[in-house]
Amino acid sequence: MFDVLIIGGGVSSMSCALVLGSAQNKPFAIDKKIGVFTHQKNSSLQEALFNNAYGIAPGKLGSELLSESTEHLSQAYPHIEQIPNEKVIKIEGEYPEFLVSTNRSSYKTKMVVVGIGSANTFAIEGLMQYIEPHKKALPEKQRIQLKNIDHKVAEGIYVIGTLAGWRSQLAIAAGSGAAVATDILTIWNNGVQTHAHDSTR
Image (cartoon, rainbow, N blue to C red; front, side, top):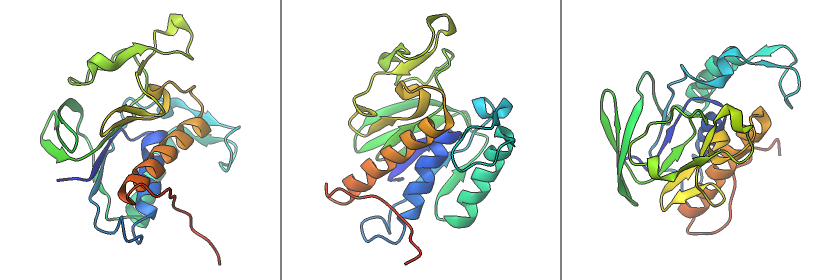
């Protein structure tokens, strides 16, 4: 049983995973089992070039960020299980026990975070009833989002990045994933507001 499974290997998902991973020594997070599906084939980062993203050197390719982010997660927070090359096709159940099925296997988890982009090819069974037109995308692009209030779709289900209704900017997607990570940390901390910072002090 996972405590949280993150679906997607793009900016918002990896940002969420990194923040959750960095809380590994906090008493309320030390025993949590975290997983992330790092299926990146359809990530919008594959063809991206960054010249205007805070903290990223100009000229950085999105394809480089994809591989570097999974390597960063693996080295810094090896306790997070990366599940590559599996595509989620179905989510069933309700909080605190969901069954997430992929094209290869199935996994039990208490919470789910969905961050796979806003293309109208979205087809995860169990979440289709939450689809609505993207409120911040051009209508002709036919983008979609999942209905949510402050990233929360339903009890135990969160959505991040463009699929949560945000615009397609790296900084926005990263912030969205980090925001949900701190919401989850707060839940694990019995509702006491929290976050995860490193410091030189």
